[in-house]
Length: 467
Image 1 (cartoon, rainbow, N blue to C red):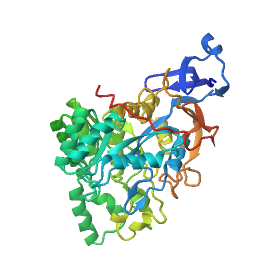
Image 2 (image 1 turned 120 degrees about the vertical axis):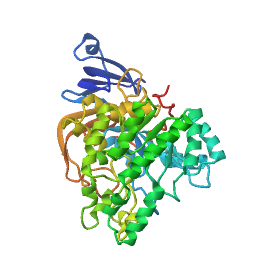
Image 3 (image 1 turned 180 degrees about the vertical axis):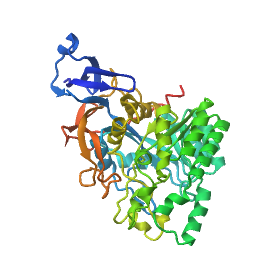
Image 4 (image 1 turned 90 degrees about the vertical axis):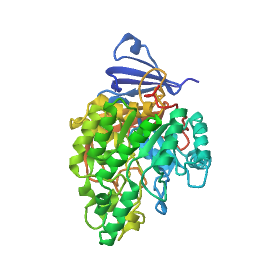
């Protein structure tokens, strides 16, 4: 039985085009597009017709950086794959790429299988995995090849968090050499964790325990230094590099310099760095703990460099690094010692709307919005054109978006499983109205119609900017 949906009368926006077109969906995929009012479109019939008049018709968002159920600092991220993917759908995201974690002394396979088990039959939208490498050795290097073949084609390494996820320069170089050979992409958390630990110890010894000191010890120069070092190690290895959650002007400059040399170096930033700042970390009565993440929020003046980087394509992707911890009972673990505050912010539901606000504010164009939130992450991580665009043959992951609606972001109304919003009280223009995932309604006229288990694991090809 063929299921057909017809989306009529909207402005279809992709990274490449804006066109008034009707979209025909058949059996979970986009079958055709035709100019609205044309003879071709007029001849289409479907069991479900969606009126998109005065709406944008955009690809579902691809959030390539989430942490559902992540163990961190003696607790777990508060969103499960069920609650987190449901919230993502409410915000117009139809694919996430989450991070499976290898623990030291265990194989990559064990870590990956644990994440398969967490996500299986629980997701409202489609998902893939990156692999966090915590223990680089001969065995795990060989395992990397098998994971690439399985559709886990990217690997995250940490220059931060000594004793937890940290890899030294030799381990990083060896993993990069392996990825150069097997086509994988190394994702780098670029902060000098060894130096930061010294500064943390010294700050605590001085009695500087409030959340704002988290931002002060994780210095922008130590992000820039680590970014520079990661780039040089990647050059030595002949490997591509993707630097996650870039927050500092000096780190953007390192990426821009590398890209000006024609190196395959890529950068991601996140909404928190574009819209929040150290002013939030300094909020009184321990409220600043809500904004503790790493890399940390920076002084407001860094934001201009991040927006500029997104416009000049020195930064290519905006992901969320969604890693929520409740204020009560989780963030509070760090009262009296900022280094014990679990690192992470909620945001998977807010990304598409905040970036649309950036369009309204004139920071980026509509097509650039779709590029950095849908198309480029899909290409970067081997999902395009199945995901990230509206074109014949693509999965029918489609969002009907009302660009004129206004909404106020709040923990009262969001769907993430966390007791605060990082954007509490902020009014934005634009709102998701209807979301299709592979042609099935997940959100319909602002009502949830999805189900756990609709979302399926999606194996990925290698980075499509390197082919």
